[in-house]
Length: 428
Image (cartoon, rainbow, N blue to C red; front, side, top):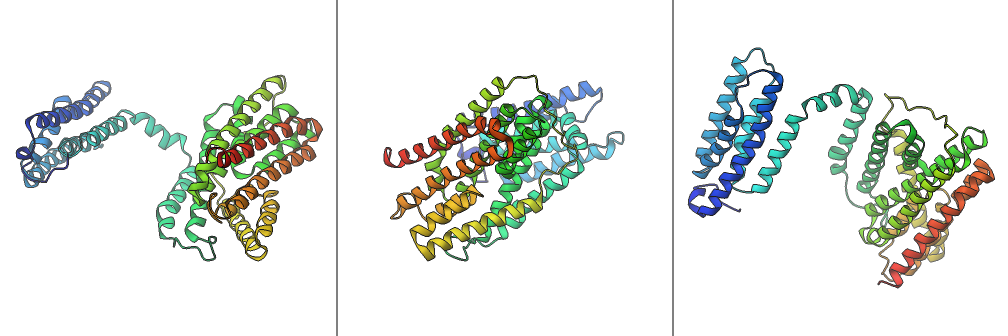
């Protein structure tokens, strides 16, 4: 309801008033139930229980119904009750119940303007109150000091540094400071999520999820690392090839994220082909794991509990390399035309597919005047990258490792390219 801040009771029909009162009562009841159970479990008396929270929410509805001035007086009254409780209860140093009591008053008032938001806030408050032990355990035991520091750094980059960056490219469509910092934040976020995922999974899943997480940093390096272990006799070639294929799933996910950061039109075009190709990779990796047998126990080094969520130096280096490749590809396109664009894309794809694709999609939309050239460059770059990874696997891990990896790698990329071409020519 879009209502003024004065005499709400006179501007609302009777049925709507009943709905607002019922919603406020429900919100207060939800929070009050949790606080009542908390008192019973802790075997102590708080200043507010089930009835008090219901009355606080209803009081918020009634006070704001008569205007913002009466609502403010009611807020002072409720705040006074909470302050008195904090002042007199010397044994209990917490203020959670008092804050929740004040919030129930404002949640009740919020029901006049948007019942759905008020209900959502009441549910969120109840979950926070109910999850006390879990939240304390996460804050004091599960999250390490290093992870907390890295998380604060990531939030500072995303919420402070990124909004301050100028959103204007310095040369053609490339060298945009905002997009460069946004790319850095994206890389750090992916690494942080991968780090947390690794901590959540058991040792039996460590091989697959370690490869998946490492793939977000560098799938090519992950494939080579696994291959070296196979060649040294430290891993089964088929099972390690399955892990290497999972790192290629990370490549597709990161490719989607980077293209979305560069061109929303290209993202919508490549989304479905990437999802289908990624599904093929996952099923193939699971099948290889099954036929690879269970007799071999991988000697993986366990991740240090206090390890970093991400490597800032590595992420900055990756972001700079991605930007440099975009500049090189764009520059070749400017100097040599379409031939330079294609040559630069193919050359860059042997080393880093994400930057090569980002450089191409920045040139224009797939249905623009040069759309066919751009599409051809994207398809050729994807295929060259698949062949480069296959060669990398064969050289680093031997023919068994390469034979298990290369067919699936090339097939999924051929499928992606065919679907990408078909989405332009068949469904346009």
